[in-house]
Image (tube, rainbow, N blue to C red; front, side, top):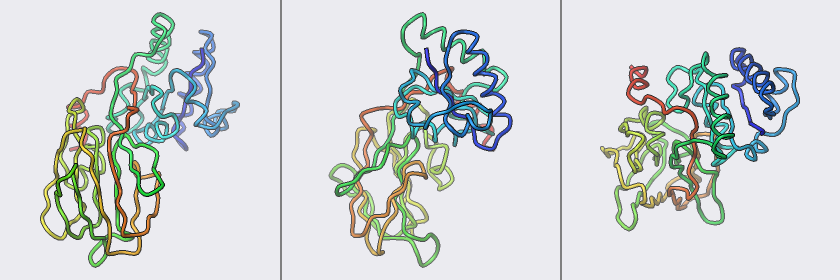
Length: 274
């Protein structure tokens, strides 16, 4: 059996855990494939992150940012997150339990022929002849520059009904998983992970536009104008500049994200936000 592993860059604890997991699984007859940067850090051979998608399970060691980085490269491959961050909504395994948790996941695969995981929605943005990789947290449509006197004109249509139109720094279309991230910082609501929904949150609108929670099957269309271009981003990292006027279509991707390991304790993690 092969297992993929990505460790947080520049984090000595993450590198040490990656080495420990690799050595422990070698004793169990499991080959660990490391992304190139992790491999270099711990003196092993590695591969491009996207190549890890062929493994039945990938381990992410770090914070939620490392988990999102891993997810961008491995798609719907199940990911087990070892938490070295402050909150850890995506990473449910404490570092001291990392080796035991990964070994348990491997044993489950050997016994049942598949990884035990839960599915979470991903959102994907597309436009005229283009699309971005799906995001676990959100898709954002932004003006070129934030702040007073900048921003962009936006119209937001949910299915066939216009929700709002006006000027703002941008707008976010957010999954329940992403409600605790960028969305929360922009005044959006917390959404429990089991709720089938999307959140539409305007960023510093000139008129008071409250966040909107809609059914997860809805299609959200964002029409951008009033600026030379808009920036569309998936999970804040995959970005595309589009000339305006432009329409960006955001919907739940048919392929969900898959999170392995124990479920995160949502309400306990919320306490760390205070």
